[in-house]
Length: 557
Image: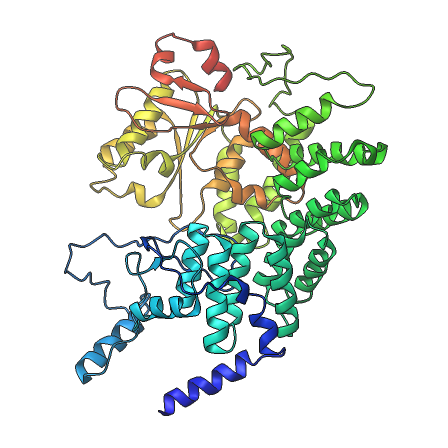
C-alpha cells in the first residue's frame, strides 16, 4: 500500500495537467469506436527512447546465442550490463518475492488492425497484465510497424480517459509516429499540447519538432526550437539541415546560408539533403552571390575530402546543366589508372607534390605529428634523435614497411613469416627497404622466429622501437625524408595523424601525398604478394619481379 501511494504521488507530481482534462481528451475522442471487434495479427515489439526522433537500428549482444533452457554466464564482474538486475531477481527468488515485471518481447503483444474503443484497449491490456508499461511498448511497436495514425490516436484516448493524463514519454512517441508519417495536423496538435502542458522540452522533442515543422507553414517554430536547443546543448548537423531545407522552401535564402555557416563554424559536415535543397533552390533566388556560395560548397568538399552520394551528385550535375547563359553537359564516367577522365579525356590533378609542398608537409609532420604537444605520448626525445640520425646517415629508401601491420596479415603462420615473405619479394626488385618494428620482435618465440628476423635484417634496414612507442610517426618521417619517390606499406589509414596537422591546407597536402605513396596488402599469400594502391589499383609484386607489368608498379613503388 505504501509503494502504491508513493507511485501515485510521483505520478501526480510529474504528470499534473496544466490544461483542463477535456481539452486533452477532445483531441483524441472522435477516433474511439463503439467497441469494434478486431483480428489481431502477430507483430514485432519495439521500444523507442523518450528523446529519440528517428528509428534506431536494433542492438546486438556480444555473447553467443545459447541453447534453449541454458543461461549464459557473462562472468563474475559486477560491472557487467544487467548484473544488478540479475542479482536482484535472484535475491527475490530466494526470499519468495515476485520477480520484477517482465519486458514485453516480440511474440507477446499484438496490435489491432483498426482503432479501438476504451473498452477494447482495456481488454487488450488485460491480456498482457503483469508485464511492463503496455502503452509504451504498444506505441513503440506502432512506430516500428508504421501503424495507421488513427490506431495510435485511439490508444492515447484510452490513456487519457483511464489515467487522467498522457505522459510526456507517450506523447513523444506519438510525435515520432506523426513526424514519421508527415501528419502535419497531428504534429500541430501535439506541439500545442506539449508547449502548454510542459514548461520545457528536451532536445529530442525539439529535434522532432524541427523535423516535423521545418517544411510546413509553421516552419518558424522549427527555427525557435533550434534556438531553444542552443541554450542548453549543441544542435546536431541534422537539426541545422532540416532548418536549412525549411528556409529554402519558404524562400528565406539569407537565413539558410546563415545556418549553413553555423554548421561549418561548429565543424559539422552539412547533411547531403540540406546541400541538395540549396542546389535545387528556385532560379530567381540564385543571384550571383548565391551561385558563388554554391561553388564554395564544392570547394569545401574538395578541401575536406567529402565525396557526395549519387543523389547529390545528380543534383549538382543538373544544376550545372540548367545554369543560364552557360552550356554544361554532365555524364557518369570513370577515371583510368593513369588519371585520365574517360569522358573528356582530360588528365586529372596529379597526386605528386611540388618540392615546396613536400617541404611544407614534412615540417608540419615533424612538428605536429611526431613531436606534438607532448613528445612522450609517442616516443622519447632520445629515441627520436637516434632515429633521425639513423635515417639521415643512410641513402634514401624506396619503401618503408610497417612491420607489425604486415606481420599480422595472417595468424595461421608465425608473425615473422608474412613480414619476411613481403620484404624478400620487394628486395628482389633491387629496392632499398626500411622495416620498422618493435624490440619484442628480436626475442625468439613461436611468433617471432629468430632465423626469420636475421634473414629480414639481411634483406632490409631494420629499426626496432621501444615496445610502447608509436611506429606510425617514424614511418611518416622516414618516407618523407627519403624524397617524393618513396612509398610506404601499411593498412593504417592514418586519420588520427592527419587530424593532428595544424590546418586544412596541410591536411589536404597529406591526403594528396598519401594517395600517391601508400601501398596496402589486403591479404597474405605465400605464393604472391599483392599490393594495392591507396587509390584502389592492384599490383602483383611477384609477377612484376618476373618482368610483368613492370612499368605500372615502377610508378607505384
